[in-house]
Image 1 (cartoon, one colour):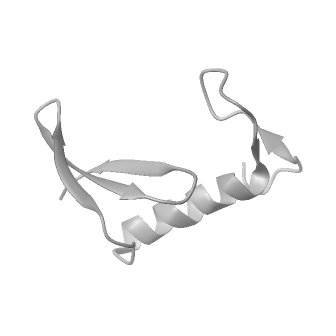
Image 2 (image 1 turned 45 degrees about the horizontal axis):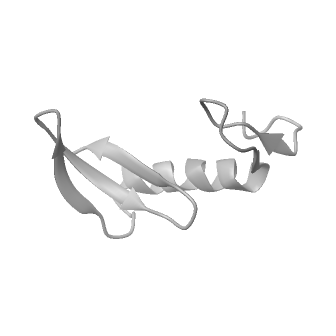
Length: 66
């Protein structure tokens, strides 16, 4: 999807449209989390599952903690 030719995306649930660059930043953030090179995170628990929250300038990603 990042390679597609578009300028704006509507992320979900009829939220405000975002620029394509934000989607590229989300992809880069996800790749850095997977590789273990992401910035600091916050440990927490969601529905009994240990999670990590990575905060970025315009979005956050929450993933299952290892």
